[in-house]
Length: 539
Image (cartoon, rainbow, N blue to C red):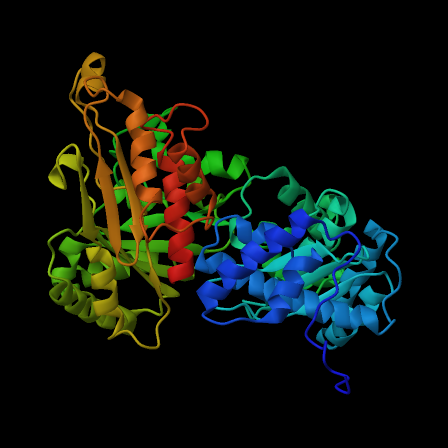
């Protein structure tokens, strides 16, 4: 035959292509083709070659997994092209000293163009490829069949510190986990959890820029201002943006539900709390409000509290009752700001709607807009936080036992209504997650708690809470196993986010009846984790 391209699209299998691998690749290719609605022979080639492999797709075969696999396939192809040029040296390991040397390139943004060629000299291929919709990936590490390690990055955040930390995190996996991973290893830096492998990679990535001892002595950890940042950046030979990205978490801590009369060791509980956070080297930001006692507000401006504050930031919390008229509480607010002069210069205005189930979102949004417009005319707030929750403290107020409900989250509607009139301001959505703002003490005898306690799980999606409630733990035939049944119900829903967070993985585990017995207290942390991960994606 004269056609020299007759076998152009025919892929010759490698010598290690077993019947099992071929069948697995064919099965995955068939499922992917159905989801795509078209055939792409290159996808089958990637499945068969093994680097991208079909193991990733076999996890669940969801649309999200399909998008991730297709992204990975393209990264693999680009990496193979780079290797075929002969410019990539054989991989002989990636010593920590190399990571330290590479981090020096971060001092000058112009050096970004040298990063890929630098890594070629050490046998590593770096590929940048934007993520597609449905993905939640920062980076991936995998090995080509020839053993060459590949790092793929989505660059989903346009920040200099994010670029360098993602790169060094993935390269840390190459350095210390090369022999541990045979399948592609994906990372979402927002959701690394407490996995020891990720903690090891995080630590090495940080130490590539600054040693532990230097970081402990860095003044910017305790004095978060630009002058200290620039001094430390010069001292430790780091780009200021990279050093700033290391950051120290800040915590706005309020004792709204704790009576001011409670003393600990003879001093106000708020002072005790601030001292505890200072002792643990945690960044404490105080909160004041016009509905607090004079003594409670005054203590925030005394050394007992101010010595625990590192960044001169404070929050003014305003409740829904205060929104009626700014002019009525204007003097009280300005007095508080005046008390903080020379102590706090970064004020955050928090509009707390508390439990807002049944509140007219349009009317409340109008109140918030009017209040904030008047407030910012008096003072330049660093940010405005609008928060609240549709969840009441008593589950029975929302749904009965042995039932389920899709509850519209009115706090989102209020926020959406309010921000339309706050253009130009830094407005932040505050979230009570799946916990009610109102604390509720139970007057039930503890010995009878299991008779009246019914399992409840809240799972958020779109602008709703999906709530499932069981029957009395002591009286229901399934007892504590109702939590497993509820988890199975949630996992089966079309809106369930497979693999989106540690909390979602927890629900999958419990739906399968695995692990320890679920208790009313143990289900809360993972479902809060699921909620926060979802909201980070949504916002």
